[in-house]
Length: 229
Image (cartoon, rainbow, N blue to C red; front, side, top):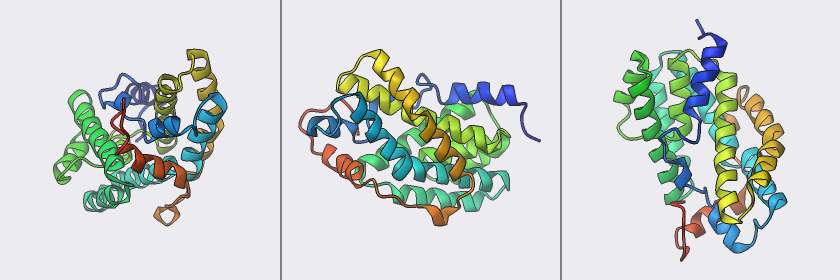
C-alpha cells in the first residue's frame, strides 16, 4: 500500500533538497567546462544546455534507470536491482560522471537509511558491493518506502535540474532571479521526461547530448576548476 500522498511529498522534498547530504553542490556535470568554452554564457544558453541534458542526455537516462530500479525494488527483485546497478555504473560517461553518480548514490542511501530506515532498503544496500548510481539508489529508496513512481521521478528530475541551475548561477555568473527564471523555464521538460520515463523500459536507454558528454570529459583536464565534475 502506497504511503499517504502528502507524506510522500514531504519525504521527497527532504530527499531532493539542496541541503540533503549527497554533496550535489560540488558537481557541475560538465557545465563548468561549457561555461569556460563559451557554450553557456547567459540565461538563455544555460536553459538550453540543461534542457538538452534533460531531454536527450543523462537526465532522460537517469529517469529510465530510476523507474526500473523502482519497479525491481517494488517486486522484491534484489538480484535484478544489483544487475541494474552494474549497468547504470557502466553507462556513466567518463571517470568524473562515474564519480558523480556513484558518490551521490552511496551518500543518498546512507542518509536515507539513517533517518528513514526500511528493511527492504537494508537488503538492497547489503547486496550492493559499492555505491550504486544515484538514480538507482533514488528509485530503490522510493519503492522501499512505498512512494509512487510518478512523484519520485518528478522530484528527482527537478532536483537534478535545480542543481545544474545553481552551478550555472555561480559559474556564468547569473543573479538569483535569473536562476529562478531558469528553474521555471525547465519545468515543462522535467514534467515531460518524468511522464515518458515511467512508460519506457531499458530498451529506451540512450541519448545524443554529445556536447554535454564531451564537456564532462574535457572537465577532467580543465586547468582551473571549482567543481569536482
